[in-house]
Image 1 (cartoon, rainbow, N blue to C red):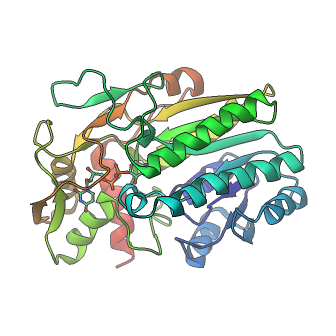
Image 2: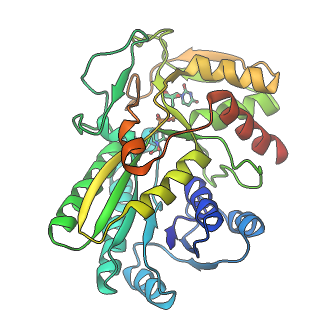
Length: 335
Ligand code: WQD
């Protein structure tokens, strides 16, 4: 299996799940937002694997890698994933996320390779427009409208559309996994989130306060129409998410086609509820200030996870405290 973005957060965890399931892993990464240390940690966890340092936009390098290692499927993680950053750098996001995916698909076509698992995102839904629950949040199903509200979500929706057309052209059998919010770390705590660039996500910022104190955490808005006014998200354990990729890979048939599947727990938690959970598992107090809402943020959504169970026999196992504990153990182990 070729794992693009293997040095990244989800890519490294998916590689661990693939290796654990007996698959041979080949990795490619350009270290744009990761370091070689991630490869070393993954190697110590799963043993040696073939690794190519390259940008997935170098179609020749990708095609050579596929050919040289006799790859029979691609799991494509390489990309940028910050909603906030995509608002200020839309062209960079479309270049990396859309052009990069096209490059990988063209390399696959050159070597007659047809199986593709894509790292998509719940941000394709935007805010959603269905009814909200008693906590002010919406359960999103794959049949709900694709209506992203930021460039990151639009980049993922564009690739999903490309996969629809690639399937119609008989080029590829693919599945787009619409991740909700991945958090946590591998149960061994040997690998975890370790971005080279400053993270925008909630958990790294909360964990940093738990570990080192410092400036109060910024909570982006508390005037949303939710149970406590802060945004609600569906946080899913990164290892549960990784296992979903193995299930998705094994679900791919030989017939061309494309399907999108939500990967979430089916439960939403607000920002303040996440802070409470981290305080519970760490025993530390997390000071925070409420500041202005962050441009591009959706208000409150969580996954309807039924299709993943029906089509992939997959459902999330870990609860929020387990996710926060694994994230804390990883973060704490490196201090
Ligand atoms: C979560 C909530 C922030 C930081 C993520 C991934 C994206 C995609 C969807 C897979 C929001 C609030 C954050 C902080 C805060 N996943 N927040 N203070 O934006 O939902 O996107 O999930 O594709 O890749 O990035 O996640 O963790 O940035 O924000 O209050 O310092 O936490 O406003 O409501 P987001 P996030």
